[in-house]
Image (cartoon, rainbow, N blue to C red):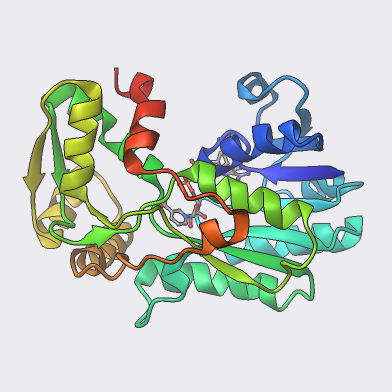
Length: 282
Ligand SMILES: NC(=O)c1ccc[n+]([C@@H]2O[C@H](COP(=O)([O-])OP(=O)(O)OC[C@H]3O[C@@H](n4cnc5c(N)ncnc54)[C@H](OP(=O)(O)O)[C@@H]3O)[C@@H](O)[C@H]2O)c1
């Protein structure tokens, strides 16, 4: 079988490509710039294109048996392009990287935007599976500059817990939904095995890296002011503040066993993620 992977150089897509190849499938990666293909495993097919370019998506989807779809920002127009491209190319199966935030109530601001994007797919008539990921463990890569330069992490979610998930495990469910029948219309809530505070994640990172990392708790409001001073657009700073308030209240501390239930294998711990990514913090 042949699968088109959007975001193949990203966190989840980057884990999905080798898993599909190892399972003996053909993989076609959508890349915006052909030079990015160097990052992909040998044997990966390449389609140069862009989520903003409907024709490139149609060409990339032709002959594929399914599409793994993700977006950086949940723009409904890009989702419409993908729906149209899939229909024109005759591909019915879409595995969509969505978010736990789409099923929390009241909806977080960012969750509402992702839910509106998901609605484009829900109304498409295509066979869509929704991967409702909790916070990705790879978000900790955002701490790399301050750990490297200042030996500290500024965080506005303490003491809230989050069921952070390794992108590797999100990709395992992505591969399963692409390659097996019976997942269309389903939404899976994907989390790691533990609900952790950011402070606990930072402590684990410090242990794995073998050097001290100071944890500096700030309020969501202080964090938003700090982001605004560093050039974050007000709308984004407000949405992140809303998310941090929700995290602080442990609203994303929910744990399901969907990953174990679907695969028979427990998801990886944050410590395992950290051990696999020490190079990024050097
Ligand atoms: N971060 C979280 O905690 C979290 C939790 C739940 C759900 N999610 C969902 O996961 C997604 C983002 O995950 P992430 O932050 O980890 O992203 P990421 O994987 O780092 O995304 C980057 C990827 O997107 C590709 N890309 C970006 N814009 C593109 C465009 N216009 N056309 C084609 N490809 C494009 C990039 O390709 P290039 O190589 O060309 O740059 C790269 O492969 C979002 O949909 C978000 O809602 C995230």
